[in-house]
Image 1 (cartoon, rainbow, N blue to C red):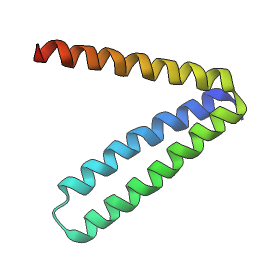
Image 2: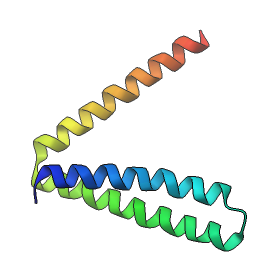
Image 3: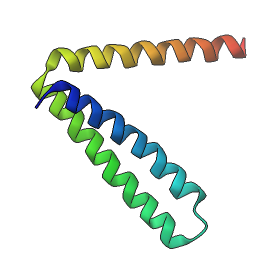
Image 4: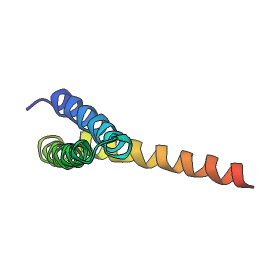
Length: 85
């Protein structure tokens, strides 16, 4: 499976996780909230599956993705700490 396909799946499922959380939080009816939670669980499973597939198929791309995420989180943490000081 090509790495670009797995990367596209990662982006899709990451956005799906966010959309499902918003749906579950803002839904006016209980049944819709249940559907939002179910969508969240499915999106989380898809994200985990695509991360595993990337780790198995292309370990270098997985390492690069992990490094990029760590760099982004470190930058966000520095910005948050600078804002509070």
